[in-house]
Length: 93
Image 1 (cartoon, one colour):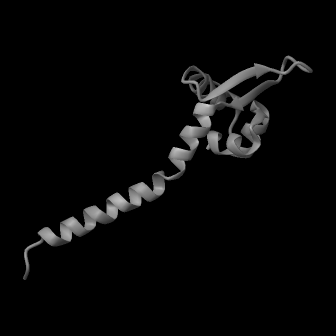
Image 2 (cartoon, helix red, strand yellow):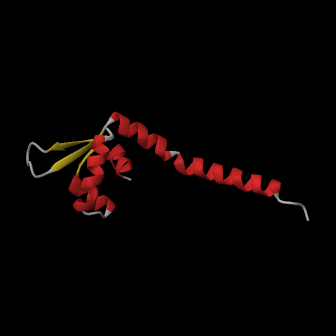
Image 3 (tube, one colour):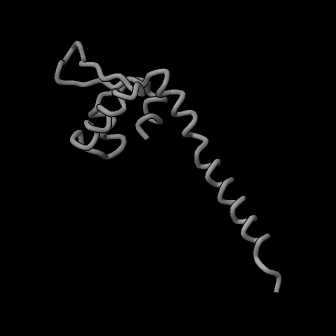
């Protein structure tokens, strides 16, 4: 969800992300650190107020978000195919 929000907004403070997702900064901080380590976002201190941590989506983050956007359809397709395969393997009564 963080990538979805940042894809639309590009840069947000941790506080704003927390408000949009109804999550505390204690919950977001470790997640954002890992996302930064993986190159999905960049964490930058605000020049106006060093207490504010700004989160910016990277090119890799945008690509990952676009790939993840299709995930529900991929899962649905796979589950539908599995259902039809199961139907074909059931013995006829």
